[in-house]
Length: 274
Image (cartoon, rainbow, N blue to C red; front, side, top):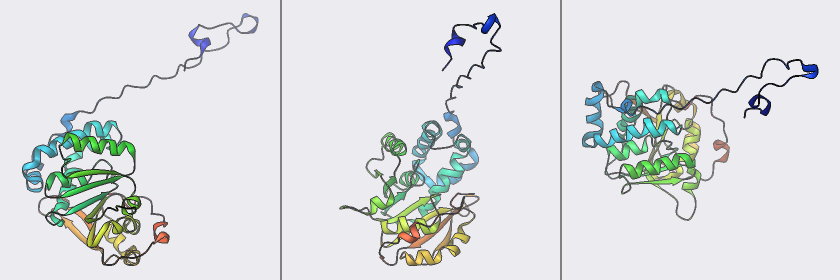
């Protein structure tokens, strides 16, 4: 707020002397430049990969890409620097995971954020039934709007809440496949996601360069949580460079609460893609 004495002009100090230099006026906030939807255009060099991974729903994927680089950026769900890489780093990276998901599967996407990978999988695979699990209201609002705009309401629902809440209650959610992308280290992911998988179902965790290290570090915790041996998968080989790194864990056993494992703090940066 501008001070009253500055708005009304300078007054004299004691004895008629000037009171000194005027206080610096606060800078007005710069207007936010609307994101350019043209950034979402599929680069020609990725067109072949996009057709192989997304097929005849490419126009729908393009509409989603435009939502991400416009509303997604304005709402803080996608960083402005990610907009030019929306196809290779995000959409195609997520679409490649579809090769691990059986036909007609029920998919639960934990920590869905802007809909990655859940919405991409729903676009690429219309045979799937997808639930986007996200606790933050501003994100679930965007997700529901995206579902409506893309006319995916027949196969996609949005659940506002944490994974623990989705797995509990009178009508708990269960899926054949549970996905998560850049959410947490494997021990915490297994704590949150394995209870959402049906027995014999799978957790598919999209990971980065540290995936193999995470598998070794958290093998004991995953086993205690009822998971089988984690397997490192490379999705989209021969189509994407680099391919998508996925850690696959089968829910082999149903176990009780594991609060001690859940309380373990993740190492900084461990869950991010690189």
